[in-house]
Image 1 (cartoon, rainbow, N blue to C red):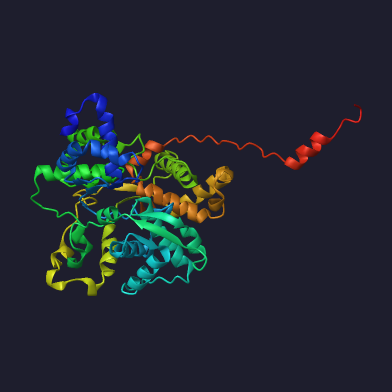
Image 2: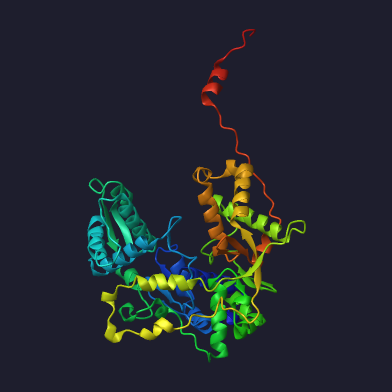
Amino acid sequence: MRAREISPLMLESYQRAARVILANHLVTTTYPDPLALPLLRRWTTELRDDLLELFGYRLEVTETTARLFTAADRLDPTAPATSGDRPFDRRRYAYLALALAALGRAGNQITLSELADHVAAEATQVPTVDLSTERFTDRSALVDAIGWLTARGAIRLADGDATGWASNPDAGEALYDIDRSVVIALFRPPRALQHLTSVRGLLTVVDETATTRETARRVRRALVQHPVVYADDLDEDERLQLALPRTAADVAMLTGLVVERRAEGIALIDQSGRLSDIRFPSTGTIAQVALLLAGEMADRVQDPDAPDPLRIPLPNNRTDDLIAQLDGAIPAAGVLRELADDSAESRPEARFDAPQETEATYPLVEDSWIDGVVTDLGVRFGRTFAAQWQADPAGLRRRSVDLLDAQRLVRKVDGGVLVLPALARYRGVVVTVREREPQLDLSTELVNSDSSDPEE
């Protein structure tokens, strides 16, 4: 491992570079910041060797981009693309893919209205997807996809304003410069999509006779891809690799993360905030309510005076439904049947979430209890919530639970959530409410300052 050969004085710089590429997969001259690409170019040789050895990842670095080609062992329904704080839905994903295809055929510049016309024309070929520039919701969704591309440097705003176009396409316009090197680096699927009849074809092949090296790679990938890796989610060989001190130690040496090992599994704690795509605990109403809710759940489960909660095993792998939905959206007319790999439809996924001989059970917290807690939190701390969430307690409850689910602290099931072991680290959350300074009533202050004492 090359990281062990780096001097202690330079190790922090190397670990920072590793966190940057693992967090972003694509680095450009501007994304995620102007200093990232020079840092990666400084450590290209060492990173290329370590990423391949530890994870089976391939790193390509050019003068303008750095691209990490990862291996996907399973789909993750909890990590959607986002624009601002808005998760992408099916329409935004479709617009993003169609916009990327249009940019690949365009010249050096393109206007937003031209790009919209290209996307609208191609959208007619995708069942249940269309784009009408007459609808604000469609224009807003396209602008979200354009914003995602702009953030990564695939296009750069040369003139105009995309928000103005979204508000009124007759009065607003935007002109973009196209960075072809970034466009090419963005779309590099591991296999030709026209040869796939199932999204499983994009996942790593699970070999029942996998070597110890490949098993260790799979566990290390889980450690950097998921907030927590539970031993109960792994098969026997993977649990053995997780238990070996060197497995997590190698990842910690590469990334600078802190290993938190418990009987139930391992979490790598990112104190720098440069590897996690979602920081938790964090600021903002949703994150803070989620933290308070986590503390309440932990207290509820461990309260000796409360009735013991029902304990049930985790449901079957929830990505099965996601795979079925994605496979159902593949346009049959776009698949080259002569070159299609039908074996992908039956290809097994990586064995995370696989049932064990003796299934573990987890305490169930009912939806009604969660609703009551969120309502109580609103009464106690609602004055500190953002106005949007003060007016939408149901949405706040949903987004807070989604955040805990994405962090693998709970698992959403019908009727409530299953409390997972890592949630216990948030028991006993202490709340300190910062009172806002009273607002100055300017008119009153002026009157008071102009008033004179009649006795003077």
